[in-house]
Image (cartoon, rainbow, N blue to C red; front, side, top):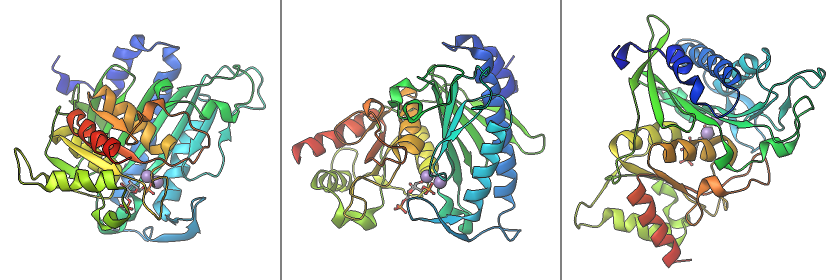
Length: 335
Ligand code: AHG
Ligand code: MN
Ligand code: MN
C-alpha cells in the first residue's frame, strides 16, 4: 500500500504498538484531537463569512485580547477531550488553571494529561492568514485514580509522550510525534479524512530562512542582534531570507520543510520572552528534535527546562540544527 493511501486513523492503529505505555488510551486521545481539529478547521474556514471574527471583548490571563475563535477552539478541544473518558487533566493557554477530569470517579484509570494552545496565531484570523493548534501529552506523575495536581502539568518537555500541531493553512495538516519521528497528514476537505502526505518529516540540517519579529530589534539581547546581523551579512550562503508570519505553527512548519530558524527572544516588553513554555515551546521543541532539529532558550535545551508555573514564558530559538547552534554561539559570546 502506498503511504498516500494511509489515513491518520489507520496510521495511529498501525503504530500504536510502538507506544511505550498503554496504547489504546493514546489512540483514543488522538482520535479526539483529530475530531476537534476537523471541527475547528470547519469554523476557521468560515471565519470570513460569519460574524465570528474580532475580539470577544475578553482578555485572557496574560492580558492579551482574545479573539472569538480562540474561545471557540478552546471549547471544542476541551469538549472533545473531557466529555469522553480519555484523559485525567487538561491545561489550556486560554484557561487560568488546569482542569481536573474524573475527580468524582475514584475508579477512573486515565493516565494522560494534555496541554494545548487551541488557537495559535489568532491575530491572523481577521486577515485570512494561517493559524494553528498545538498540543502536548504527558503521563501523569501522581497516582492513577486520584485527582490530578499541578505536578502532573509542570513536567519537563523531555517527559512528553506525544506532541503535535494542526495547521489551518492553504491545506489543513495534522503533524505529530510520539517519539518515533514526525509524520504529517493532509486533510481532504471533501471527505473529511487526513491522509499521510509527509512521512518522516525532517528539518534540513542547515537552512537560509530566519523568522523573527524584527520590529522588536532594539529590545533584543545583544547576542540575538549579532546573530541577526550575521544572517544579513554578505558571505558564504548569506544573506538569508527573512520570513515571519507571526503564527508560530506556520513559521515552524515552513522552516521544517525548507530549513530555517525561528526566534522569539526576551524583549524589554516581555523580559522572559512571549511564548509559553508548556503550551507552545515544549511541544514544538519535541517535534523539532524528533525532526532532527533543535530548540533552545539561547543557552539551555527547551526540553530540559523544568516548568515552575503553568503559564510560564521562555525565550525560544528553534529550527535547523546548525542554525540554532550558531545562534547559541552568539548568545554565549554576549552573555
Ligand atoms: P497566540 O495567538 O496563541 O497568542 O500566539 C501568538 C504567538 C505566536 O504564534 C507568534 O509567533 C507570536 O505570538 C507573534 O508575536 P508578535 O506579534 O509579538 O511577533
Ligand atoms: Mn500561541
Ligand atoms: Mn492561542
